[in-house]
Image 1: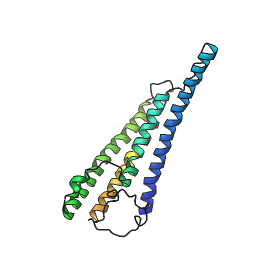
Image 2: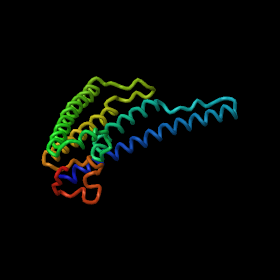
Image 3: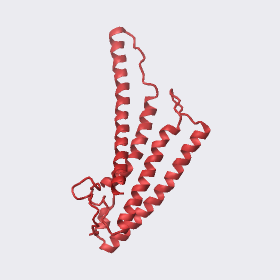
Image 4: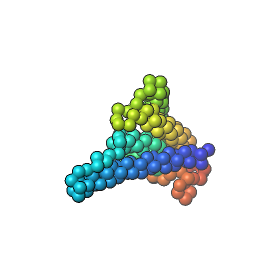
Length: 193
């Protein structure tokens, strides 16, 4: 089960990276079009009017996909902002309680937002919502990565909840990704310090 979850988190991170690269491609295409237009205007006296249709909207859609799909992966890598200064001062029992409480509350909130976002996708399909730009893209298409990202984050938080409940130190405490570092993927129970 651990390997399946780790592959899910990594896969989500990889797709987020693809969306990030897509932002770069779209922006570079528009910058290239602007440079060609500026050169044509300078050399020929008129520009061609090159433009990547709805490039700003697509960059925004890709940014939303990147942001939401990266949530679970960054949680497992320990890249989310945490208030570890407070946690470090607690006893083992208190720290375990705080980790359980935070992971549980995070899972509940993430599940709520995931359900709401899935409902938003369904409504967008039912009503035929489209983006207002030059390219009328059905809105459910950029909303799906948001919903998937929140679902995967919910799974990751539930995973962290059960890790803390079992007394194992959560993978994000030291910024190690379960299964990614030497010894981190072992199914051995590590007591919380």
